[in-house]
Amino acid sequence: MGKNIFLLLLTLVLSTIVASSLERRHSHGVGKLYLTNLLKRDSTIDNNRHFSSAFDNLDLDKFVLSQKGLKHKDKIKRLPGQPLVKFKQYGGYVTVNEFAGRALFYYFVEAENSKSLPLLLWLNGGPGCSAVAYGAMEELGPFRVHSDGKTLYRNHYAWNHVANILFLESPAGVGFSYSNTTSDIESNGDKNTAIDNLIFLLNWIERFPEYKNRDFYITGESYAGHFVPELAERILHHNKLAKKTLINLKGIMIGNAVINYETDKKGMYEYHASHGLIPDEILEQIERYCNFSDKALPQSHECDDAINVAIADTDPIDLYNIYAPLCPNSDDLTAYNTLNKNSVMFDPCSDDYVIAYMNRLDVQKALHANVTKIKYNWQPCSEVIANWTDSPLTIIPILKKVMANGVRVWIFSGDTDGIVPVTSTKKSIKKMKLPVETPWYPWFHNDEVGGYAQVYKGNLTFATVRGAGHQVPSYQPTRALSLAKYFLAGTELPNSPRHKIIT
Ligand SMILES: *[C@@H]1O[C@H](CO)[C@@H](O)[C@H](O)[C@H]1NC(C)=O
Ligand SMILES: *[C@@H]1O[C@H](CO)[C@@H](O)[C@H](O)[C@H]1NC(C)=O
Ligand SMILES: *[C@@H]1O[C@H](CO)[C@@H](O)[C@H](O)[C@H]1NC(C)=O
Ligand SMILES: *[C@@H]1O[C@H](CO)[C@@H](O)[C@H](O)[C@H]1NC(C)=O
Ligand SMILES: *[C@@H]1O[C@H](CO)[C@@H](O)[C@H](O)[C@H]1NC(C)=O
Image (cartoon, rainbow, N blue to C red; front, top):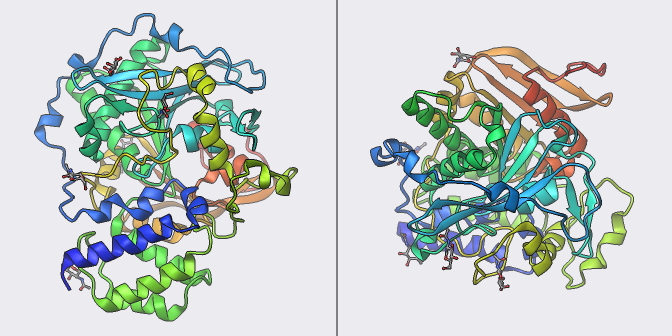
């Protein structure tokens, strides 16, 4: 069987899952596109991890425009249905390419109490998913959307307790970010995304000059396991070229991150078998007959058959959090919300509430979003990005380069995620062959085990978050906030229930 036929079949199988009546619960997830996978569809995809010299020698000064008066214009007075808060919020566009008419949308929330805290950028994955949808409105942002799709309530464990948080919708074609040159949307890939993100940042700190020398951190999850280190690498490269610290990058942190294709895949099926989702025989068949050393590799029919069984077995559950309830199929937004009113449990219909909220005209106006009347709706994961031109099979060399530059790297893993599970991440880290500094230990939060951690020599910390799915701050908000706090402080997660006081 030809490679193309296999790829076609695989795409059909995977896209059927997403297109089925189960769409709702599968679509709630940063990896919707990671599942249907743009990356698998195109066997001509460029897996070369090196940036071309054209990118390396880019004269970024040309892309930094005057930002005078724009910060003031971006100030958000109040979001519709928002409870009163003391911190300031901003929203707006940064042009990353004047000629193409390409602009990225950001939403920025200042820290709750002290503005002198670090600046933290959050990116979501996909590729194609929005950091406003997930990061801001369902994970670590200050508000969550009520089931009415109109009003907001406080997330008491928002990360703006410990940092000023910048959410970026990237690349163009995601959320409110757009390009006036349609072909831009077809040529998105890892390289373009990294460059656009860097140009965005350079312009953004011109607009918000008080952050120019501020300690800066980049964080994100899922396919942002690519975006975050790739942006870090670009920043280090351009700091070097400029012979000065354009951006004061201190650390990066990625969760349930796509790191290394082969170990990500192997670890995923291992997790499914060890968590009783697929039979051991199917795992054995996958281990024996599948070869995940390359995305475009044609597989044997024994491999295809086994994978199809695994897909059928895991299809009826939410693989982004294998123990989570599903959002029932219903057009009535309020149908589900009574179930868990007083529970800390994450509402599995949250995507629907956020979609309703973000598509409101008054909300877009308040955010200064969609000023050019984009032709399509706002979606949590882009439906207009249909191609992805380049995606390295592994991000490990970039991670190593970032670490070698003294940048702190933390990798975390919600341990009930079945998409990029803890088994995948452990395998990927093992491939890095780093000596252990602090061996595996339970870390504590509020007198309970928050997860497990291991510290490696060479500026890497790995931490699991107990009872969290793919979007860790959605499912374990207090543990996630604690993780962020220790990451920013640069101290090890506490190994006993006694609280280590960090300042
Ligand atoms: C895109 O086109 C619209 C309509 O002409 C224009 O208002 C807008 O400024 C353009 N965007 C950019 C980033 O140049
Ligand atoms: C998997 O495929 C790669 C590339 O074709 C090949 O080099 C490798 O030997 C294969 N691995 C196994 C275990 O067959
Ligand atoms: C932008 O606004 C237009 C006109 O109101 C609307 O039809 C479209 O859905 C919006 N798109 C996005 C991405 O918000
Ligand atoms: C993007 O996808 C479309 C539709 O599949 C295809 O026609 C086009 O050639 C692709 N573009 C690139 C740059 O791969
Ligand atoms: C870790 O960071 C330090 C600087 O803080 C750097 O000197 C060292 O080379 C890094 N270690 C490794 C193994 O990359």
